[in-house]
Length: 565
Image (tube, rainbow, N blue to C red):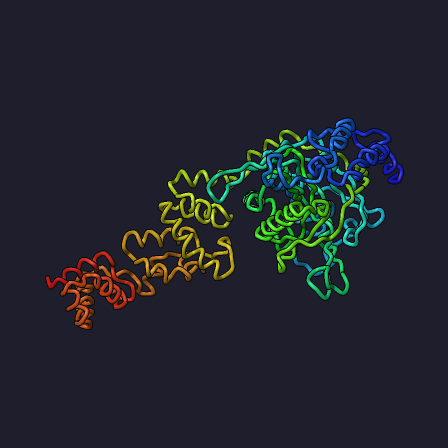
């Protein structure tokens, strides 16, 4: 029965009809013969709207044409300026407890090959069952990226053979993706905003992971091992339009995309663990030219900083070859980024599009997403980073503060919680961006991992404002508070340690007298005209009180006694 179903499904591939595979190969042939074909048209094949027709696909493929050797001198005799055309394919692991089509755990860090079963290993007779949470997270991501959500889509088999793909195919989405035609508005470092298009976002399963022995990468390794724990982990592949023009654009795009995924609890975006992986497609062309250059794909970038460096190097490499009259050496290929040598190195050449022999997944029904589900998801979505930044600006905070506070989930959550306790925005921002962020950096933890209650931080700030404790005392006790020491009451905690601020005028006067008596030379110089020494005496009194003296009251008393009043 399953064999018959398999054969029937292959004979009815989506909208291409009974002869779909043959037609598809015929359409792809011109691209295979056209090395410099537009990477965008190739990547958008098929493109949204979701129900693509063979006629439109044929038009897209035949629209691609060969590109002549790029000019180095314009018609006016001036040297040609070049610009980069950059698009990014981002693979995002979704925050589900189990894999895409089985009940195996999708957690990171388990012992190799322990989170596996007959389904994710592709054993004969094992049937996939769709993880509904995967679909819900993908819909949430699509809405956040301003995409159209398809009420009807389907899964397809993407055929290729590699050691880390146990089934010999990957369940993905081909001509009917779940999300398409979106955009992402990105804040730039100078305060401006740029909008980058999102072509599509589709669901698929991850492959296993190849582990190289004897080296940390393929080059120099003695042999390879495969860990299949990752095989079958749910992925959302997000494909940007080629709207970026620099490494800074790509950095800002990736940073904002990850921020959205984290704030909406779609993915943890941990690039070091591989839960967010970016492949960059880049070409160069004469500035203003509508014709795209030869696309080069770059992989192996484990941070946005490395992605920016790889792009900047690749732009320089391609432009350098063209200006040297070696434009033919810029070929369609996949290159790897070497973060130690700071260069890209060729991994494999591509003579044309890979033939993945897509056909509808016979063991999964079409995916239906109701309008009600889309509406409910939209209504229940958390505040987006852009919305949070706008709200923080209305609080009167400077843009610098806003960008820091709205950058990480834990930071924004703590700031909002302290605000809810009635603390002034700027006071809360200063403590969070200053001493608390420094503590987290030292301890290598996020603010979500702090044991302190927001109410305790709010109480500490109020104790400073009403002169119950000094700012210095607050800084001294802050590490203990962040570990939860003052959660039952900061004032009681301070009293127990004997750190309440000294505001008794008699006690302060006695401390000032002791400091003046211990520093007769400085006192004589002050009274001789060196009034800047007032700061020296303030520091000595503060030291005498171990930071507990009321600074305002102390200054009043000190000035009078310095003048001999």
